[in-house]
Structures are given as structure tokens and as C-alpha cells.
Amino acid sequence: MKKIFIAVFLLSAFLIVLFPLDSKADSALDKAVELYSHGNYEQVVGILSEYVQRDPDPSAYWLTGYSLYKLKRFDESDKYFRDAYLVDPDYSPTQIRAFMPKVEEIIRKAVEKSSSR
Image (cartoon, rainbow, N blue to C red; front, top):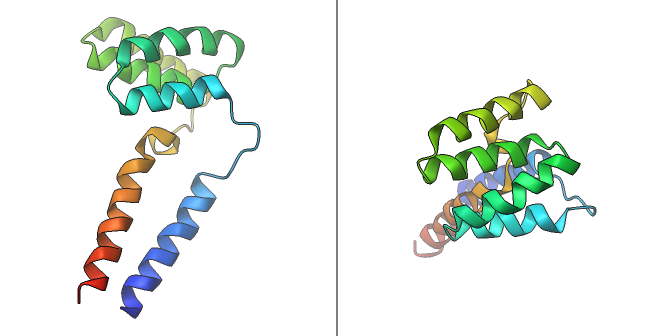
């Protein structure tokens, strides 16, 4: 139990550093992340293709590229992936919030597993 608690604590601390809370989170990007998590890739592309015109955010470029990839629009997706790295050469897709539910699911399962012992 103690090991699980320490693991969850360290993972939480890591996530806080990796995904700091941003009081200025843009609602368009947040909406696109939500739509992406529900598989609404066409809507994501519509929202984020406009979004990157006013705010060249590498996460928005990458999420647009991945949405286009899911839609099998590979040439367009490649352009957005490349643009993400032109904006920030050190960008990593792990920085995007769309993958947070997977991390939260891992934590939830670890907590359930530890409480069932």
C-alpha cells in the first residue's frame, strides 16, 4: 500500500510539473481536446486550423495533424506535424492534454488494485 501511495504521489508530482495549471487556458483548444477525446476529428481540424492562425501553439498543430491522420488525410497531417516542430523544435507530444485521460486511468486502476488487497 505504501509503495502504491508513493508511486501515485510521484506520478502526480511529475504530471503537475509536466502539465502546469494555466489560468489562461484557451477555450478553443480545450474544446478541441474534448472533441478529440470523443473521436470528432473533423471538428477538431475545423477549430484548430483557425486557432493556429492566431496562436501558433505546437500542441494545436500536433493535435490537428493527428486528427487529420485519423481521417486518413496523410499529406495534410504531415504538414501540421512539421509545423509543430517548426514552432518549437523541442516539442514533445506528451505535452498535450488529450492524453491525460490515459494517465488518469492508470492512476485509477493502481488505486483500485491497492484498495482490493
